[in-house]
Image 1 (spheres, rainbow, N blue to C red):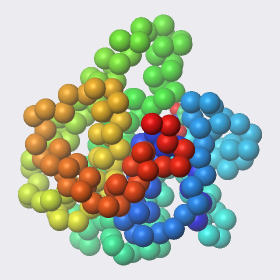
Image 2 (image 1 turned 90 degrees about the vertical axis):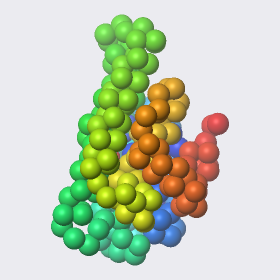
Image 3 (image 1 turned 30 degrees about the vertical axis):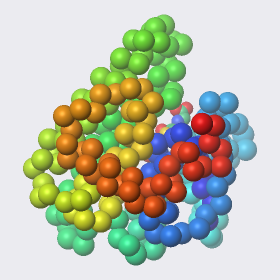
Image 4 (image 1 turned 90 degrees about the horizontal axis):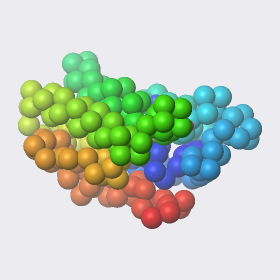
Length: 213
Ligand SMILES: N[C@@H](CCC(=O)N[C@@H](CS)C(=O)NCC(=O)O)C(=O)O
């Protein structure tokens, strides 16, 4: 398999975690987002949506959207599972994952932040305020959701799931923008547990070949 991705991209990071959790080898193909490599013809041929990550399967199929990629990996390589065996558990885990992937991340994507600055002429500090506001608001909701669920080591239960694949990159991203993570005990306990797991360590930006520090 090949993974087109960028060390700092949180959607890419989600897929790297899933690959590491499942012990799957892959070729790392860097796409430098800040240099706009995702908009160049060679990458557009792979990803018409001009987004990372893209997973290219062993049979040469290019797949976009991190959540779809992770669910594909989970179906094709079921061990260890990233979704619970019961329908209700799967719905809970997907809801947590989507709270991050659909409610938080799209508001803070590179192209959204660029649009705020370049087109709407928002000052750097106001842009950072936008970022911090939406991440903090989303994580507070995430914490309230976790508080309703049975206690566990990770977001759901005692093994990492799709929800953890989404949470960890969002926290990493938030750290870069100095988001306040206080008062989020369940969320940060799950994050800390993940960071003690070797798969999350191997997938993190500082472990990536294109890491710029
Ligand atoms: N929902 C997509 C999001 C993909 C996405 O937005 N990727 C970002 C990096 S995290 C990207 O390629 N951004 C390019 C841009 O904003 O121009 C997924 O989960 O894969």
